[in-house]
Image (cartoon, rainbow, N blue to C red; front, top):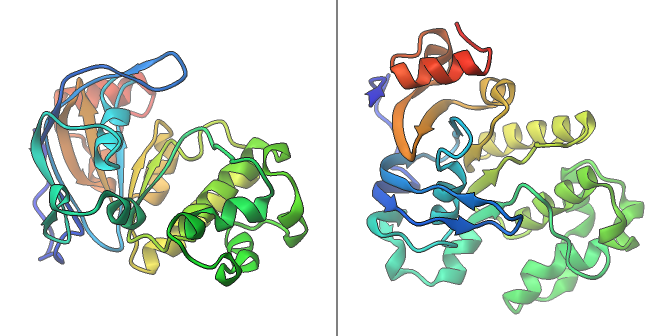
Length: 258
């Protein structure tokens, strides 16, 4: 593995992953199966976006599911603010470390019902949820508040799903291909929102196959090939001169050679 040296001392990581390993296929619900991950170590700091890229089947979805607490690891540690997740209440962890799936899932009911769902699950008063503010944050019109969520376009549903996560005020977002198959307008809205959230100190781990999105958004890039981190470094330096053979081969296959 090739890693760029840090340019300056960093803050304490919000999420620290050491030696994370999982070696069993996991069904994703669409008939596919995610690959394993092996001895993955990385830190995610407040106010930064880290893009995880690599060939299909390389373990990107497995990694993000492990970090979301949706899959049990075989070995390794994951810590939030220095606390091992095994010692934390899982509901509390998932509120602070929230995951957005590639395919948005709307619960039965209106857009407002969906935005109020996190609060209801935590025993909070739904009337206190700033529905209008959440819709504004993802550039959706207030007139959609009473619409059945399932009738929205895929792009609108993905924005509602992201707003629903923001209702939990997470410290960290785990995003699995958040702009895949979205219309250009929805993609731009999500990109701008993620840039704003980074400025507000939210830590973001972005799994993406869209290298243009990684270039535009990320501060650092992690390249995952066959479940292993083969390279990690600052985005500009990586795309200008990838150091590992595997990373160079991946970029060449994607038509993104320096």
